[in-house]
Length: 120
Image 1 (tube, helix red, strand yellow):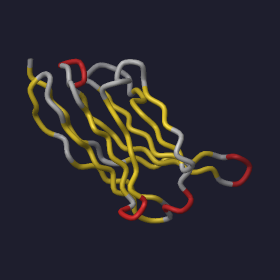
Image 2 (cartoon, rainbow, N blue to C red; image 1 turned 45 degrees about the horizontal axis):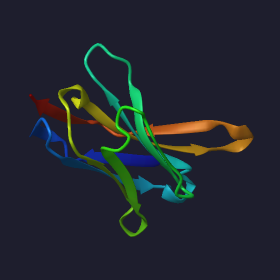
Image 3 (spheres, rainbow, N blue to C red; image 1 turned 60 degrees about the vertical axis):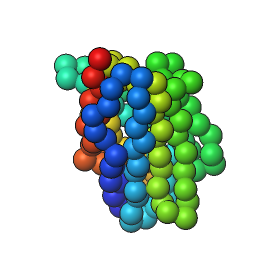
């Protein structure tokens, strides 16, 4: 079991910055990758950024160049630095950690989400 917990959301003006944190507890050695997802009202949850245990990183096109994800292994924490925020970035942001078990079965673990609000 892995328990991700997000923090750092809040209200920011358009063009501003926020940093989200995802602290993972539990069987963190088994994590294959940690990702940031977001869901705005009336929209589907979408992947924003992901960092693998090997350090590979990918971003959604909509945030590439503005958002940066990183990992501090000593603190069991993954960060999402969000710069040049736009009103369309407003959403509940979720941290996801997954591991692959026997027979390639994927197990997903989700945090409770943190609200990001961007005022225009």
